[in-house]
Length: 522
Image 1: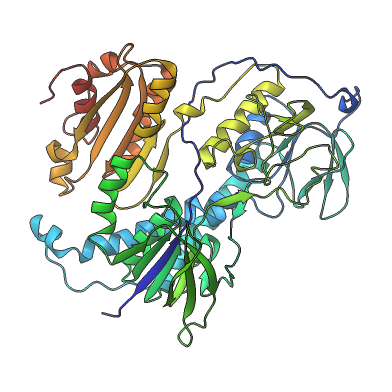
Image 2 (image 1 turned 90 degrees about the vertical axis):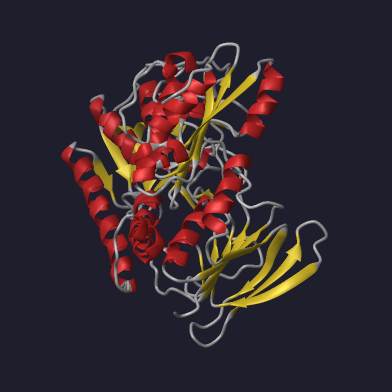
């Protein structure tokens, strides 16, 4: 087999995780910037949305559901990052490469009584699968907007500095809008010293095209994106090296889950890592002719520690808001590192230091930095529209789940155990913990997938669920029950008496819920 290795350089940006379908009203004292207050007049649209990712799309659908005339400035990017360069195509790559991994695991298959011959894959075919899926979903999103009479404007929307005005950057036409929702999304963050050519040194944008499967790839960052791509590359035969700026792999994950992930996703695979180092200089190479050079320095002392040469390097160091050059300054909005300050109702504030509200302007999704997840952006978009029509609404971000679609998957809702311990000490309650194991689950054992666990964190005084962390087969699907419990304020006492189908994977959670109240599950 061709020796394939992938070096992964790691730098992670910490974000909170959580989503609640229920909106918890809160009152936040604010002042209004009267100089920007709009007068009654005729508007081109009730709501104009700048950006057409998952957040902007969700806001547009809900706005039309409230009979508001709605325009979306798509910037020629219907679907945004998630559909075109993120969640959707990456899942296609993970699905295809995961099949390759499964079929090459002869020991696992033999335990099920299955024998297979050699496994081959078509790299271009896998790449086309991802591209075609993204195209199909993008078309579905666009058709849904058109079907609901949303005006899809091709150009990027820009603020002009005049209240209610949005300029189409493509044509120069200015529209007068009663309410404006900013949903510009984000772009990959490339640290200083790293040169990206999207050929041998690439961001997730370039990686999703799967132009090649290098023999040795360096992935800079061991967060969600880096971890998922390590799964893809190793399944297709590559070797991977993670380069992480912090002293531990997967620094934003719950530590117990991260240790399990290292045992299940790192150690059995062709993956090594460098910790507590920066990729201070990354120089592109030429595919098949010249290697990529990566110079590393100690994260503490900043002294040079190592230089490696790899076939390719992926930069997975997080994302930054796509808010440059969209007229924020002209509108009196001061961003911090690109992030736009908002209150709990998604209303835009002058700055993170000045809570004065900019009237009739909202910001959702990655650009406000509250939670950089596509489904969080959609929830925020719906919430913004609720507030526009006068129904007070606040998204409960603590109940929004997140998932990493490796094989097996990792999913979570709420804080890590480390964060929960600090929260309990600060707020004066006692943290309880209970676990369920995939090793004792009949369905998981039938699949030959007995590795993994679910951990439930709860308040001992009240039984309310604070967080749940899962690693194991189909964790991303299992987490929704837990998210709903956090959102609805369901207690472990109530959950322990709810009946779970047998035999199913969700009984792993049933075991944890029952364990929290001293019960045993069969």
